[in-house]
Length: 85
Image (tube, rainbow, N blue to C red):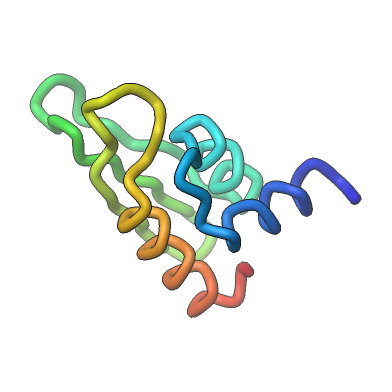
């Protein structure tokens, strides 16, 4: 099983210790690029995929690298709806 396949399997479990680094890797492998307006964007993070002009936005945790489970659930739901998971 490839690292990408393992990453997809892990996010589907919606673990309490899922990190922003893992999310960035997974979305990057799906063709998304992180877009950040700099200091004015606050905790909002946007990932954009040019091929189909899809945008995924969520709030990045202020408490380190661990993401909130609600944000992970929302992203999983979105990715399933897109057919990516």
